[in-house]
Image (tube, rainbow over all chains, first blue to last red; front, side, top):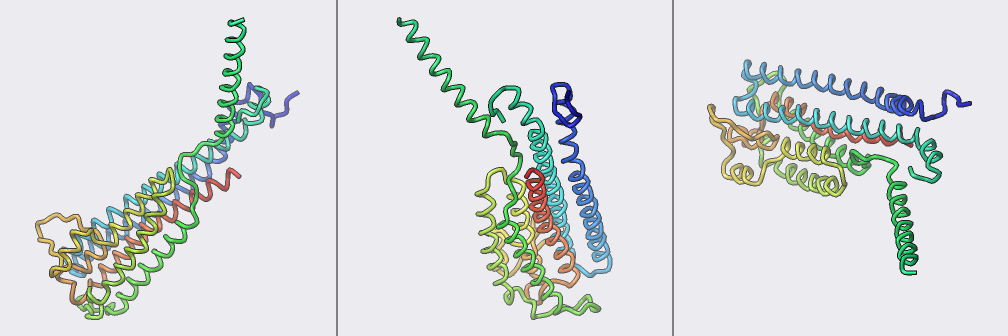
Length: 113
Length: 194
């Protein structure tokens, strides 16, 4: 009689999904928080540029360079978020593989995974 | 006889092939989408973060908070040229490191962003040395670095304005911070699979 925690042919899909969700869920939350916090920083910097142009605290040439630099910062934030998502997905896939490893090896009769 | 021999040869090769497939598959029970956490990259990024942050803070100290027009001859480009040369050297070490790691394109891109945000390209540096960089009012520019702000003709003798240093510091910290956040993300990902 199989226990709920056992991996069987019937619950294989659920077990894979469960392992992937448990691994990916919290990490996705962290990535969302990262993007939100960094977007807020970008907004503050953009406001600083606009206000500094208006008050004459920075020159027009400086403003152009700083805006280009800020575009770079925005792109860096999303590159990092993409990478973090890939790392989280990788961890989720590997958690799922780990869960079904014993079941698959037991079924085929040799160490396949 | 010949058939029997052919049969035993083919079953021998079949067995070998099967063992080969098992060897490959058993070594592939994990999936790699992105490189592992690299402590050296983390360490070098932290060092770059500290050196740029300290450098900009030092320039800011020379300028009054209350007088936006004021600049300081202590902040001239020539006085601080060495910082950029040193930074270039440290960044080259990091570039070499991240390029040697497979599946590391995101970190490689972020390190390239750090270069663009802090340093001039070679051809821009030539213009910088020949009297300073000039951006016309109606002209678009690809300049995006702290070094380019420092080497503008208007800033070369007395350094950039305090506000532009503040904004540049935020931008650079954000870029290096993003690269560090990715390394931490990789670390957490690999730890959860242990």
